[in-house]
Image (cartoon, rainbow, N blue to C red; front, top):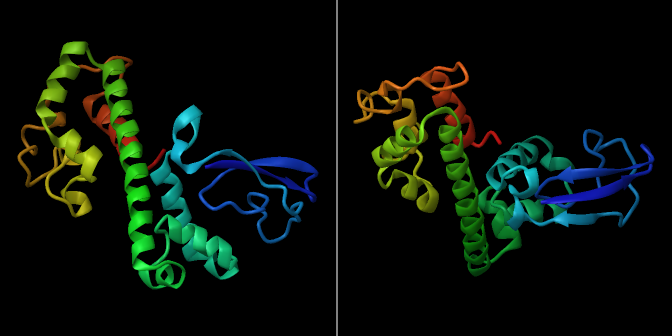
Length: 212
């Protein structure tokens, strides 16, 4: 989600993209004073990835790292917000939510994760279309078969992520899978804009691997 707070130390409004709504000054959480009750919501978590914002799973990954590093400084309310996004261990979630409540939160999380992966999948197709011909892109989509659907709806990424064979394995021609000799990197295509198929593979994986 996106919101803004007013920092008295900086004498300015700061726009923040984060999953925990907290009256902080980015980069100065512990030593700057923020005007109480100055949080103004700009965009909620269901709209992550729209309007140039970061995608939901990217923000969640950052939240997990933040909780691990600074959890001792977070308020109970902020820890509870992190728990809503499954960014804390089970035993901490159990302190705030019943099993039924966690199931309901899981349904919301799954909806957001599917939306995230759909956006990433669409961006991959756009990336391919920008560097390859239409027919070459169609050839790749045909190769993928139902791997895109499994990725979008069920989060199946690939053996490198502990999953069954998936979309990652195709684009990286993962050794030990059927794509080792028949994956993306074996295509005899010449991408435009002076990049190689390996570089295009890396660009695709930067989209798929929670880096945006």
